[in-house]
Length: 130
Image (cartoon, rainbow, N blue to C red; front, side):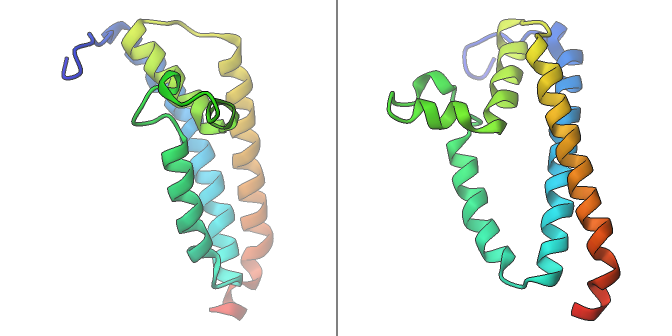
């Protein structure tokens, strides 16, 4: 109760279930970027800037409702905003599963599969660039 809002522990199992696709998305993006970094050395510099913008543009440290009206469409278009808002809703408001959770999980699974495919496709060429 650090923020003055009670935490719904009954939402913890659903919150853990929501984190799984989030992690699949992270692994897929990480595999894709790792493969690109091996082939193109400047990827890390662009990723640092982009990750900083995505982090502050995602409602992780703040609820999306306090974003200014002009920025709200950008915040809502951020794919990471869905998970941040869902986790906040489940843990602070006691919300249950919604159909959008399955859609987001399917998108994360697709990102994971695509990232792993790119990594596997480019991995035979890694030794040429290392």
